[in-house]
Length: 149
Image (tube, rainbow, N blue to C red):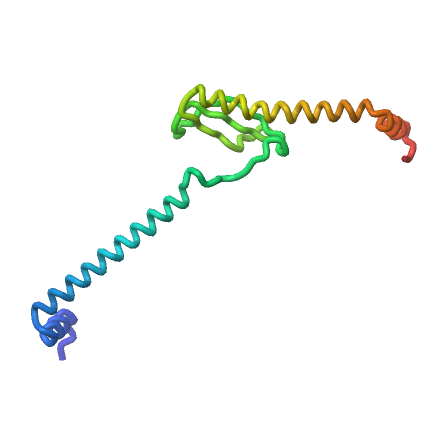
């Protein structure tokens, strides 16, 4: 008994029509392999495109709610440009955005700073109004005197 698989393959191909059958089977296998490779490449590229879509949001940060600060910064060593803006929350950098040019960086910096400053001024003004409210002052005087409300 011959346990040689190559010999069995040759015998099978001879039984199915000889060398021409073996050749067509190999050609078909090669075509199938090429199709699978192309399909895998297409699926991989689709995955990469989906995962690295520059238009897809990477996250959300509410500048007002988080009381974020905004400042011009330099890009890190791997940054695509040196024109960057750093957004920090509690002194920790949460985001760093890079821009193609200094004017574009400054335009975004001005817009983001307006959001942060307006929010800060609004909060400050609300605190002033609350402090100037006579009912608030009376309640505060009672609290300061140690009296229950």
